[in-house]
Amino acid sequence: MKLAFIIDPIHQLDPCHDTSVALMEAAQILGHEVWITQANWLNVVDSKAWAILKRVEMIPVELSQGRWVAANPWYKLSTSIFAELESMDAVFMRTDPPVNDSYLYATYILDYIDQTKTLVINNPNGIRKANEKMYALQFIECIPKTIVSADKQVIREFVEAQGATILKPLGNKAGEGILFLQSGDRNFNSIVELSTLQGKVPVMVQQYLPEAKAGDKRIILLNGEPIGALNRLSSSGDFRNNMATGGTVAKTEITPREQEICNVLAEKLRQDGLIFVGIDVIGGYLTEVNVTSPTGVREIDRLDGTQIAAQVIKWLERN
Image (cartoon, rainbow, N blue to C red; front, side, top):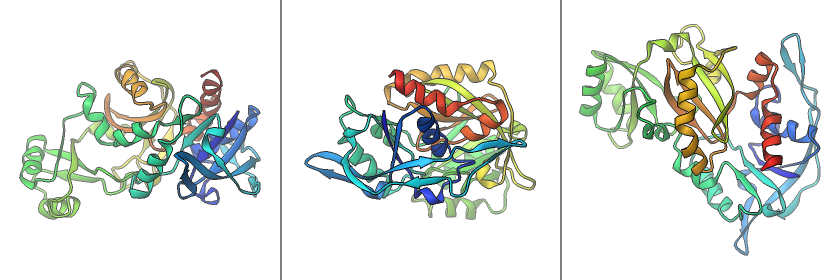
């Protein structure tokens, strides 16, 4: 197969951490051609999606004394070509959020790929529908008590009813802008005003789950089925468990409750073409559904001795 990966500039990627690199590496090991492009290299010509593409060859990372080690340099690029994306068997949209205008325009360009010829992972329309905070709200039996509002009074009443809450901007990633908001906080007005841009932009406010102290679980789903998980633990002095904020990771298992959550999500994810997804679960509650460029594969493989990326590529071979 010929596979194209829409990524951030490759020199910015960390081969020992980034799931995009794990997927590309697995595809190469399994004998497939790996091509890369970027969101700003996408085009529409004659009502078809085209891209500037570069073939990439990688030296796979190796596990040494419990950590991944990469060669330097770890990749080699070919000369650029300009080609229709439908010349590829599959296209992976792996540009990191935020989902800003540039990101959205890239998904509009990907709409001009005939998916009966070339599979796009994840479906561009599905990505647009699935704001990573808001998407979870349709699975009400799986989520903690949650509101979305820009109204200070609505937020105040919810915080007073819950006692302790987590405030999340709807468009951020990797724990950016997440705040702990408690009833009686003297900074309440300022926090809400800053987060909502003076009442112009809604934010999510969720019931605080004390179980967060025991970790925030990332579960990787492939076509609705869980294929791996890790537990993320906050660093000292930070309530957020995100790896990007200095959190550590630990081996974990998927509980019956978490399997139930996956089962509830599965059919909707498939309907929306959301094939490769990472969900976040705290204390048996779904908190986010990550569909843009979910990560965690390198860490799961290191902890569990699995080959998650290879599972994804083998699924693609079959489908």
